[in-house]
Length: 322
Image 1 (cartoon, rainbow, N blue to C red):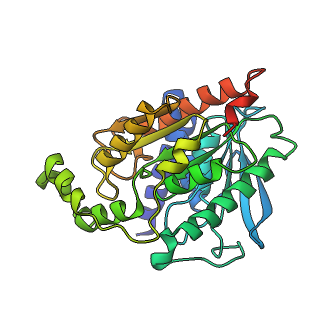
Image 2: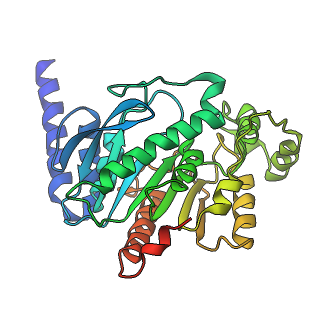
């Protein structure tokens, strides 16, 4: 039994060594590093714990620095729903691409102070404003960091963070961009209406047509304190990118795309989006068959680097005005 265990561990170590030293498996090496981070093992990249203040509370996070200096960009990760601690594994992925990352424990969770808001109140205007204020405080903290001064800063929102990132971007300090992965461009009521139908059905898109879903979405009942991101998005004048999974059964992608196209047609030409037909709600993942990180992550990173590069050019400071 022990011999079998040692053989297994030896094979795992050999596999890990191969990932670390074979150049064509760079993505695999990066993901392996992220796995170690998730297990609590410190690998490679420089990290610095950081405390910052927001809404009368002290929030606790970590900055992960890339090997590249200066970084191509710096981002503040904005959580999805639920009790979420700092996302070091995801920060590691971005930092491995030359992007500095601040990730922090959501207020009232982990080492962060304040009160966590759950239940129906979690998706309220008041709570979104508070969570946006937390992200803004984080952006202010990293923009003043000695190693990041002059580095273009942006927000990256995940899922529910897609509602919060645009709100944060309308408040000082001015940021250069936002990128959203699987974040809705619909009201909270519309997202809830869709997820009530589809979220618990892993084969949803095999048994429902787009036309059926579009018809179903016409029956949504809006709550009094509904959150609609369109007024906020219409006031933004910074570049923004959305990555959607075509098989998403958590949020209504088709309606979100329609809303974005309407905003673009009304003058928000700096907005970009991409739908990835083969992906679901989790668009940031590792493809073991291709030995590569997902297309949405890759293209999102490329967009951030390109956008940050433009923002860093002389005379480009006005890009962040709103």
